[in-house]
Amino acid sequence: MTQPAPSLSEARRALARSIGLAAFIYGYPLIELYRTCRLQTDPQNQRRSGASAGSDVRAPLNTLHHAPRPSTGEDRDVVTPANDLLYTMAWVYLGDGPMLLTVPSPARHPGRYFVLPLYDAYTENFENLGPRTCKPEGEVVVLVGPDGTVPESLQGHRVVRCPTNLVWLIGRILAGDESDWPAARALQSEIRLAPAPGTVLQGPPAALANWVGEPVDAMAAAFENEEPAAQVAPRFFANLCHVLAEAPGRVEDRGLVAWFAQAGLLPDAGFAWESLEEPLREGLIEGFADGVMAVAAVGRNRRPKPWTMTPSTGRYGSEFLGRARTAYLGLGALATSEAVYAVSHYDASQEPLDGSRRYVMRFEADDMPPADAFWSVTLYDSDRFLYPNEIRRHAVGDRTPGLQRAADGSLTLELNHARPADTANWLPAPAGRFYLILRMYYPRDGVQSWRIPELRPLQD
Image (tube, rainbow, N blue to C red):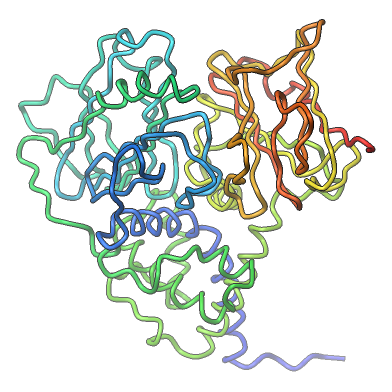
């Protein structure tokens, strides 16, 4: 039987739904990065710095803010922070002109891992400055926006041309226990950021200054049922149009972005959700909800795996769905040439990890994680943040003091909620669901084929 042809209104709604899905997947990392920038640079959100402050110390645009200690369960700005690093962050806006970034001398801090990664507005880790890429004596690097020019006085300096005017610097400095923090802070203090000659800072770009709504993660708000899609989607798409006007993205993506205009989504600083016709609004809300579910579903195997090693992070090309998933689970992931990540949500029996059970994870003496800098296993609560616990241990790695090895050199970790009699190798977990991230810095060749030890449940 012939189906009746859809009405023009139904067709427009269907088109808007497909565009809403694509626009969410493409634009979520962009919005999440701008949202985080808004959160951390808004004067009303800034906190007092100093040794007693949290790891998520905030500061104005174009200003370095140094975390005085590694992240803990108290820090709630950015999901899945590492616990063995001091972070130095800055939100750099190059629309007013070039900025100068001072990279410390690796020779002055031998053996200390550090890297100054740069991310564009789409979360692409387009540059990593550190011992492997910079001069042993350190250097001053000129950061230039996509349309910027280098002053003649700086023509001899190293120049990094950035894909977007908004750049996120997430410096990482290896830090051991508290006795090691002063030495790590000494390197941290040598990182500097300043305007280049002739650059006059004018304040935040319009998309930040005119942010629509509170800086809430749209993906989390909708997926975790904090707000219905009909409330979140209008804010998301309004901010997306405002941000696209400032950060148009790669040339090869312009055709996709132009297609968004067929549902009324234009790169326009003056875009208003209310200006769209009702069928378009309804379709975009449906597409937004579809996009949220699509991103949440990425990486879910039909048959759960104990570990999933990410094949590519930091540099995504046209792999928009994977980029969005990474932005949701771990905003600011490094390129795989710098670090490789693996995630565990399941044990060896393919059951979800749950702190009410006891697990062991055994590394053989001759089969430790293949990393030339360092490695660590970090535990996260189901909310994607570090789990606060009585012994304040969030990660175990090759530098964790006090670990006990067996006579054959193997290392066995214990993970569960209830405190064991011997806590030397214990990684505390919440009473319910949790997950792990294994990080390997300066990964060796063949890392992708290395078999990660599974978590094996024990019976009490």
